[in-house]
Length: 73
Image (tube, rainbow, N blue to C red; front, side):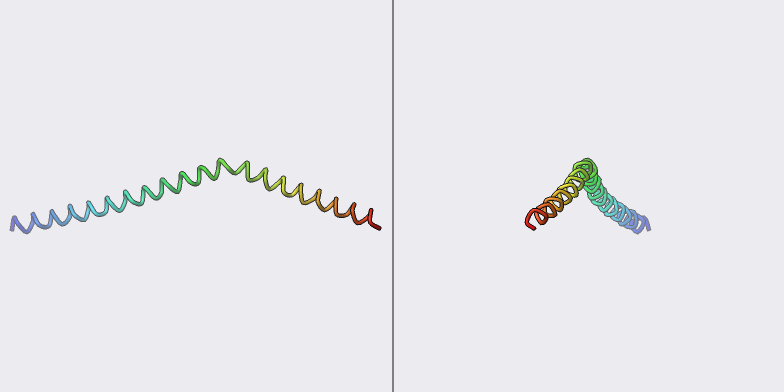
């Protein structure tokens, strides 16, 4: 009977160990994701500025095209 209990305890220890390994892997993935999100958040102002500059460039190119059409008439 004592050996059965010992075997049960060893199985439980194995299950707990396996679950801890799984949690550690999940934590590593979570930490990597957080790191990536933090880098993206830091880059966000530059991305917003780039979008604004591209909009401005598109507007200026449209004005140049319009002025060019008027000059070629």
